[in-house]
Length: 140
Image 1: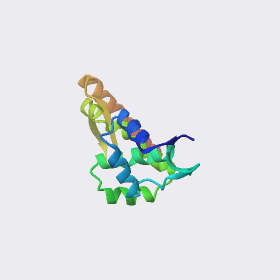
Image 2 (image 1 turned 60 degrees about the vertical axis):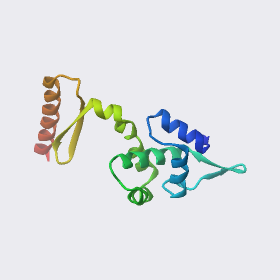
Image 3 (image 1 turned 60 degrees about the horizontal axis):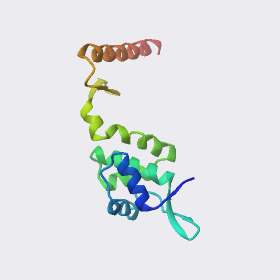
């Protein structure tokens, strides 16, 4: 397990595209959006799990969630669920969002496709996903 200072957490998140600073990392910690710091030797430190929580919190904040709502959501999730949300952080990077188009296949399925693909290819992808879903509905 890796151990980090608040500054190291900040630097990692910034390298990953987060719009965050040291003050915000400390504020999120104070608000308990992340678990309490762990004691390593005589210092309180962040761990990889804290990184997952920060990524998850930043992901949810990009969806418009309030900090109170984020805290409530994260507090009820397992670490695996936190990791699942955290993995989506890189997809919400503003540069990636600009390059993608979101398509609703049905009320449960959304897909993102790079807007630089031809319209024909994008439509084939959408049609393929739609056909797979239709096939699954007939098997039920």
